[in-house]
Length: 283
Image 1 (cartoon, rainbow, N blue to C red):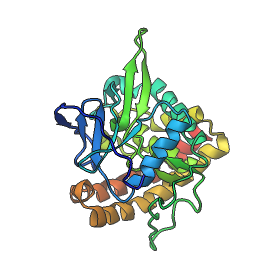
Image 2 (cartoon, helix red, strand yellow):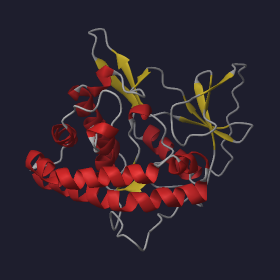
Image 3 (tube, rainbow, N blue to C red):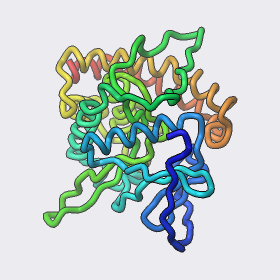
């Protein structure tokens, strides 16, 4: 985990860039593996993937080691991704149920993740302008369950099942409420219909939020608390995006320059205006 875990398999497969994400620069597929440049957070993420493997959590990539180029190597998960724009089947309500069940299973095996000596999670950045979304984490979570990071496979009966969620690059200590709220943000989705991805404008976001939250196992009190968490997340997101653009550059900077901050404010305002509808549906 400190760089000594080497990936030594020999293969002559060409490297194929994996596109579609916003901040995953340098991500490539080579044969049955995916490789990415490592960063400050990588040792902790790699330890977490090993923890999931030891816990028998099947629907996540496996960490294989570090290749000769110093890149993280994980297993490639074959299947269909949710898509950008989303595939029509990815908007089925059954998908929301599967996501909620997957996230609950992930959290239930992520209550006590012990990192190796010398490995720590990067310190969570706090901003004086707004309160943090939570005081203390209660799980380690994925933190980025987007359509681009979900892989599905088609069963003989034609039903698509969630094979795995990939790209654990943003995994880290969080709370159940925040991690689920982030998934709801992407999949409900939370934002004005005019700003949503193709095919999502007519979706009933409050209903979809409830379906996912109930599949996770949230009761009424949890569902309403999730709305408070979403509001605090929006208040923090603008500052977090600006900070990431300034300190991490790359895709974060591109997103900021392309108006990510404005989109955060737009979604925040829409959610505030529609909050009563969400409260009625989730209450």
